[in-house]
Length: 256
Image (cartoon, rainbow, N blue to C red; front, side):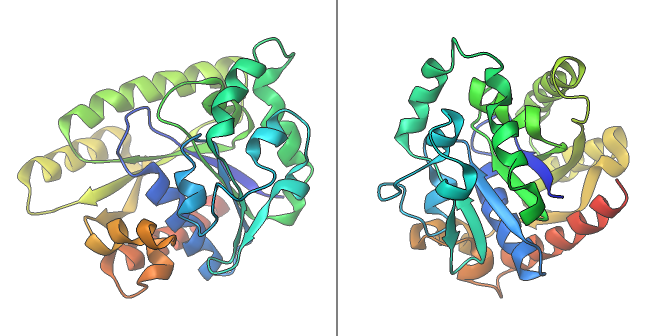
């Protein structure tokens, strides 16, 4: 049975999509069966997995509106060795179309239940806002992975996200919890980042992953080639960090 995780942060530009595709590739590299779900209408995680969002016939939009199943809409990202449930601009319209639908926040949960036995991990890339799309992700997830930069404003955004998760946990999904905080784009030479990192460890303890993802040019270049950094340049420090993170995730799940 697959473990389902949202990669979420209500602050934009913190590396959610980079984390989603690289964790997916890292998990696939160590032998895990992975489905990557793109819940962001921008479709960056789809493109970053080597799937052209303009060419896909069926997408997460069709799945949410129940005109296609996950099995029909998923695409194999051959170079990455994981499956993709892609997104494109159509997805922006799903919010409006789901307004009058009963149990609209549970559409994704029902759809994923049909393929749960085929995967070890389902990773969901959420948009940077608390929308009906994000809510669908949170309602079906076992937990949330929070990528964050070690900067002052990131701490404020984290407070908002923790409150959101508490509300969803209380009202819609009793299984939902924060799995861990992942420090990304980390530069140990910057004193403020080290201080914020220490604050995170002091406040959240073992909820902070041991692995830190360094600021890395190769990770930033990889999407323009339609690949996760783990595939694009497996020798880069960023890629190696994500593979290490994937192994840490597997170990953490064993303890859940």
